[in-house]
Image (cartoon, helix red, strand yellow):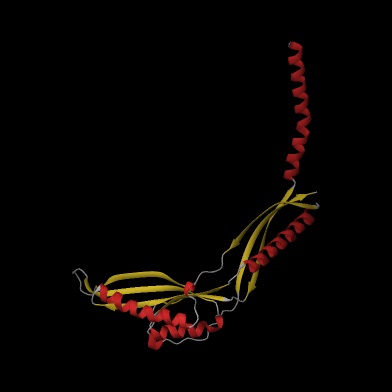
Length: 237
């Protein structure tokens, strides 16, 4: 029994000794790396616009304010539909009814002087060429708020992929530069992780306008961009 125990102990020691160099080599290999972060950006002309517009209406009572608002919003939505905006591309963003107060008198509590109802909708415009006329029509029939406008893509994936490819190319260039400066040879890719920067949010336009005074210049979408960051770990040969 003692002889068997001694043999097993010797075998375990031998296994440990043989495994140690391999483990050390693996750790050393993992330490011989270059870690870089690359940045990429891609731009293109957008093919969609996103609007937030709405109606404000006032009344002596909350019910009256809401009734006026509903009538104006109904014709506003109808104008959007008549302009070719699909029903699924019009979504209520907010609906609020609240009291209006007079704070002008000092040392007295504010008093209610009426009520205001606000209703805003988010609108997707898939035909940028008609964006200006769609807004003009909505303002002329009842909308008196245009809160924001932004531009984007029906399918952002191709542009995002271009940004990612540019980020990988940038990371590879940086890694090659560092390897050359350090006098080592760049090896294969061991790991890649990426992230992306979202497109900018809606651009504020104006808080409120009178329908009779609404004047719009032609809508200019320009270009929109997407950016990506990628971190790559390269082996050093």
